Amino acid sequence: MEGKVVWKEGMAFEAHLGGHLFMLDASKDVGGTGLGPSPKGLVLIALAGCTAMDVVSILKKMREPVETFEVETDAVTATEHPKKILEIVVKYKFTSSEKLCKEKVLRAVELSEDTYCGVSATLKPQVKISNEIYINGEKLEAGES
Image (cartoon, rainbow, N blue to C red; front, side):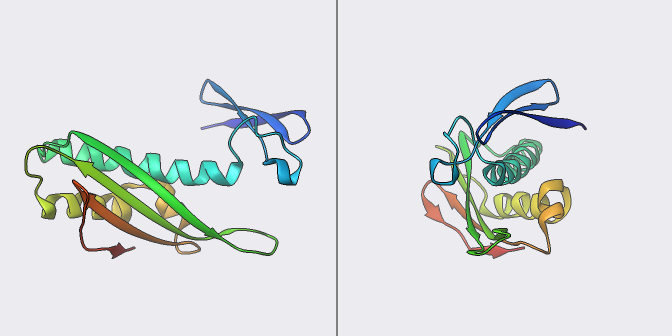
């Protein structure tokens, strides 16, 4: 895996990753113009995408009837430099008109967070990662990894 960034102007960089091209930028309050996501924001998206792909794959193998699925992340960052990510809450949101097995959903999330997700493994133990799981809007037991 290789990636690179090329400075364009201000705080904007053109990012090249795996044949994909996108912009990175900072917010206006720190000299950017908002042409793209921030690098720290992409850490959150990397975690969400990694665990989401695992969970979908696991639940598909378990033949669970997931209709929609999204993963949200919310981070707490340090107030002083380096303003690193201290804690992330990962919210897994499932919907289905058929009944989803809560135990299988919990197990899929657990397997992703503890075994398969390389992004999660990279962030731990420096970053506290906890989760919230919802099925059709109902919150299940919160877990911490």
